[in-house]
Length: 203
Image 1 (cartoon, rainbow, N blue to C red):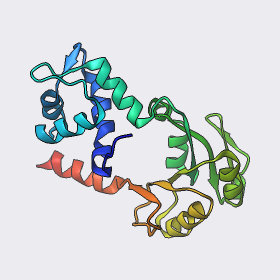
Image 2 (cartoon, rainbow, N blue to C red):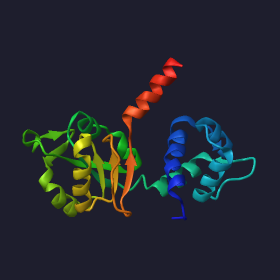
Image 3 (spheres, rainbow, N blue to C red):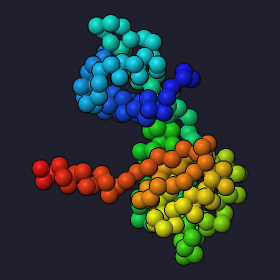
């Protein structure tokens, strides 16, 4: 894999999603992608040059070639197991969402501290006691975890996830997590996103 920064890597899924959903022509260009996504053309051109060397001045990229290059870099055809910790309404909704598979992520199980949820199957996946997290992650070589617990419990559960071998956390809890340098956290702030939508609607 070329030397790609985290900032660039965070934009690559946007490019792939746009190409998959909106580009119907045989060729596309960095400028067209930049306009569609509201990004700088120079930035997009630089990002794509790291991923695919097949771009041509004034001609752009073969759409299929660029799409395949992005899929290869993102590893979307290599299924990677992930777990969810927190089988509440949000956790269950994510368990039932099939769209993750398009990007190579497979939710294999969920964990929760509520005894009444232990052993329940939802969307073809089992909810296990939180105490079984470490053993499950070691057995199934799970490195990605989705955190959907209430904010007061988030840091404690995060610590347990890291002890279990999780090195990448998708955090839906509305609080900042403290993690070691080798652990990556992707924060999803639903309240902030809703606030932006509300302000946009009222402006």
